[in-house]
Image (cartoon, rainbow, N blue to C red; front, side, top):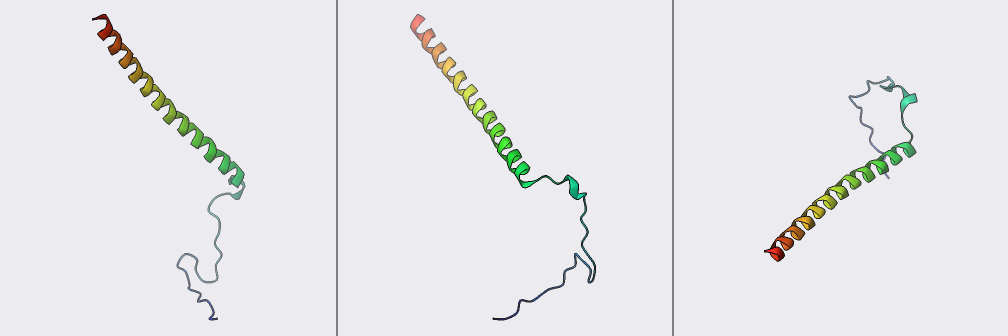
Length: 73
């Protein structure tokens, strides 16, 4: 089995260390991120469902109004 080739990068100069850009104390845990993603999904899903529900109710009211106008005429 051949040895893996190691390529120099242009990101970190030779002999230097890569330093973090932001303060490491402020990073959210993976559980926090998962909970935020799930909560965001449910909020978006609720808005989509509410829009569909509102449109369906409007169509149903329009159909009932047209039926009532045909019956009375």
